[in-house]
Image (tube, rainbow, N blue to C red):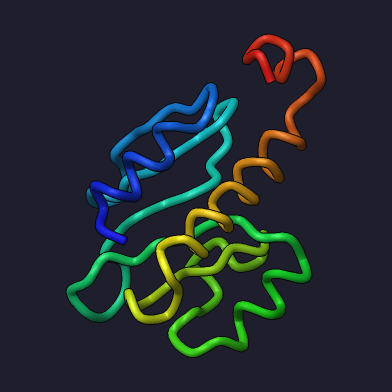
Length: 117
């Protein structure tokens, strides 16, 4: 998944905001809370996609080749997809949708109502 495809997909989710921060990382938020990042962090030249996971998904994904605990965010159950071959675009979309749902679900009831969630 390219950065443009990543941004297009994330931008299609309801009530999201997009910022560029941390050295040109593309950061997507819902209710001010981050759910997905596309960046060039770490070694190598390619884009890396990171997202919030459920506890079970985090445990399973960290066992996969070229998927690692996300730098700085692993304690919050985030993973980083290191190479395009590590996960299909469709699977990345499913996990981003799950990340969005997890993060949105942790917002207060009033904040979710304010955002139309």
